[in-house]
Length: 437
Image (cartoon, rainbow, N blue to C red; front, side):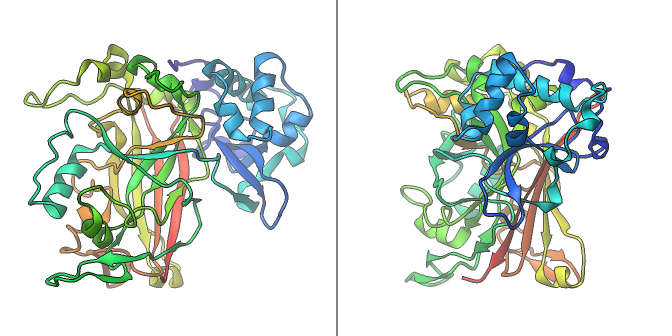
């Protein structure tokens, strides 16, 4: 279980001047996969500090660490990239984080003399999906999202009876996971126009986003051996922002009886940074109290540690900038803001449930939180909630409105952890611009 140590000290500062007050202070140190913009060279492993990337691939050539930290650094820059580090133990993850923190700390008198080529400007870098994605499971675990979705999308079916008993999920496509900044082509598919009896095959007219978090699995489990809930967090390497793009008309037509396919698998955007579980340790929180009438979790989905530290204080926001807004130089307009700690099911419960039948998880697998929504005004994590399935378009820009996304729209998700007494940390951004079918 991740605990607090010197790397979380709010008084800790870095000799990298841009780190203080940034999304990537020394208390964060998120990982990425990068190379210089315009280069066709090999992808490199890096760590974010302020507005710079510490080039771990170059750092490893200088052998700055020894012991466990050296082993972990070698794994991080090896042929498997971050997947190699993910496959190591939490002890090694923490050792490398501690060594990097000491290296970048203001207390390190030799830090400013570090060769300049080891600190690269983020604005001059190209990024890839931060690790090789294995399998991808998307959950459905927000109570406000589930209740609104049931009312708007499937009123004839009622609320899913199993939702309050277990984290519901489905298997997604890892092949169409793309890094932030990759354009998203409007998908085509079958859907049933309102009032019609025959479907059409056409570009979606109900393109939506979903504000989610991608939890990257570190050490997996053997086939047939479930992960106990009290050990589940130790299997999480870190977290990125995830946008589960959704074509609601296609999804609605194909949904029954086996769930979504073309309405979901055309693209999924992730941010280029992985914020580690160690960095998020100060922001772990008790999971929400359930309503008295709700069932208690079954024993394999419950435990004192998960009750006390299963939730995470992460705020996630969505913002839209239309093509006209970009042309006018306008800033993105915020659409929604929600809290991950409000989620009905924790990541620990998702892992315990997913492996309870003996399923094996592997380093680099992604378990997505599902849409993160809060029961407050503008707390929706998608347009179908915020615009009530397009019935109440949201005013944006100069006289525009959106019920669903149009071609040229740029959708940005950002996330951050905040708690009094600790330094806030950010997750970067997951950005996608819609291009015509």
